Image 1: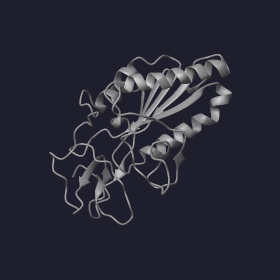
Image 2: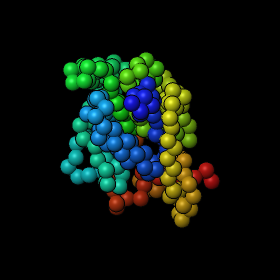
Image 3: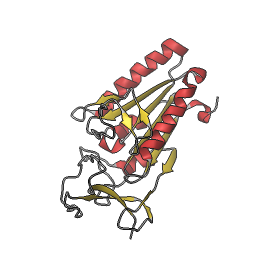
Image 4: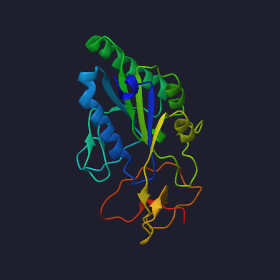
Length: 225
């Protein structure tokens, strides 16, 4: 059967801004989709409506996912509300996917992907804890916020460290430090003001980046130094 004997797996991809997390996620989901009919499973991807980044003109940020370099794209994304309970919404999507798998293949095998997991509510942790053996859960996200602390979920009841602890398989992505000509390996994300200065520690935790070729501010990768 393979794919770790068909699931019971939690697969995480983490790293700073501009480290290729989204590209890795899209690649993994795309590869799994190639096998869904041969291995008899259904694929679903859900994202938070807090992730409204646009990397391509005209795309729908709530129903599409693009890598920062625009080389990779994933459609058919299900958007969930940040104002409603994450676990409840994900359970509903998962149950509908299981129903489809039962109808098509006579099983309940589902590959379930969540990009930018730090935007989900803390009940994401309960959702992952209660996943059954027929689910392959794959997530990607920022482990640290711009303050250098573990990224808290929007409701502040838990943080990304708990999601890492639940993961069977982790992929650590690294960027290159964008401070001057540094180019050391980077594991952190620094947020800059429109004037190009480091944002203050007490500033709002979540500010969604809208990168453009013209600006030199927003989030940039930083090494420890």
